[in-house]
Each structure stands twice: as structure tokens, then as C-alpha cells.
Length: 251
Image (cartoon, rainbow, N blue to C red; front, side, top):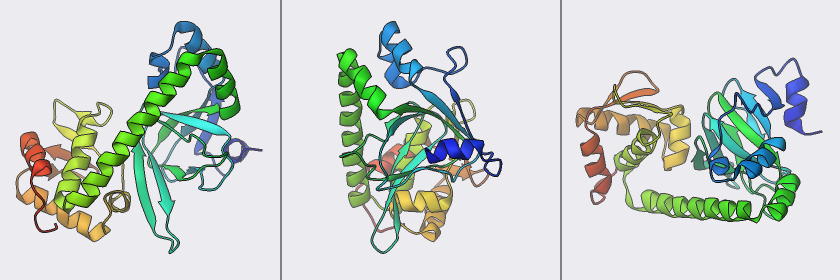
């Protein structure tokens, strides 16, 4: 039995709930918006909705058999891998409408956990493959998704290789500021649903360095930290300029 389904029936783990896709209640995912009405109905018929009430729960682990593909409806998922020494590297942050969990030779090559309270759409891989056979346009949509993920991975390599910590933090804030689920345009506030450990593992540094980096952004008048996870953008143009500068000394 799939461990997520086991979790939903275990009273000791109430933070995960699985249910059928509700056509009236659940929003369309990005992949559905590209499909015809018939294709949307077929996609919904094979989808299960997973509701995580808090962050930290594992969706799947590196090396496990891959039976499902996932799409984020709300919240954030961190995709990571551990080195031989046990150190975690967060490879990607999956935001609403992102698709993840595509198998490689039948297994998951990375691990995935929810970073905060999240809602996911889960689709059995075999059923999705059968659906793609019947509806070839879905294959093109998945190919476009994979191509987008490749471009994002290339952009991340550039950021990690050529930016200092302050610039990486600026890039992270700008990414979230570009997403309406996490940015209040009227208040110019970004909600970061990540711990400083998540951020450190994502931008390739230590949690203490993350704290110093945010302090520097504050001192330069670019941001104001209202709480640990709520940040006011005081100078959006300045963040863009910082992101584009040539790399200077770290921090």
C-alpha cells in the first residue's frame, strides 16, 4: 500500500488527507489549462488531491519506485538530494502549477517534501501514460514542462556559480515576488514559506550566512523583515540591480 494512503488512515498522522478531485472546489492546474475540455475531464478522473496541513512531510524519497506524478495546487514543495556525506542540497522549489515526480527508469531520483501546508494533485504514472497514448497533446505539454525545468536548472547553476549570497537572496525574493500566491502587491510584501535551513540548502550556504545576507539587504534599504517569513520589499528596482551586478565579495 502506498505510504501516503497509509498515512491518511493512520490517526497518529492527521496532517495528510487524501480525497478525490472535486470539479467544483479544486482549481485547474497549469497542465490542465493547456488541455481541451475532454482532456481536462480525463485528467481529473485519475487525480487524487493530497492535503498536507503542515510542512515537513515526505512525499517520496530518492530511490523509491515511482508510481505517481504530482502537481502543486497550493503551497511549496522542496525537491532535494543528499550527498554521500549526508548533506542535503535543495535542487528546486515547486510552486503552484509546477509538475514534479516524473520517473527515471521507474524510480524517483530525488526526494520531495512539503515545505509548508500544501495541496497537491497526485496522478498514477501508468494511468497518465495511458492517457497520453489516447491524447497525444498531453505528451507535448509534458515535454514543454520538462524543457522549462531544464532551463530553470541551468539558471540555478548560473546563480550558484556567479552570484554572492546577497545576490542569491535577492534572486530568491524576486522569484517569490513574481508569484501572486506569495506576493501582496498592495503591501509589497513577500511571504517566504521556508525556514532559514531550507533557504541555506537552496542557495548553497550556511543558515548563519543567510541571516547575515538578509541583514545586509536590510542595511542597504532593499527589504524590511517584518517577521521571520514575511518580508517587505522596499526597493524592488534595487533588488533587480543587485541581482545583475558583477559578483563582489561574498555576503
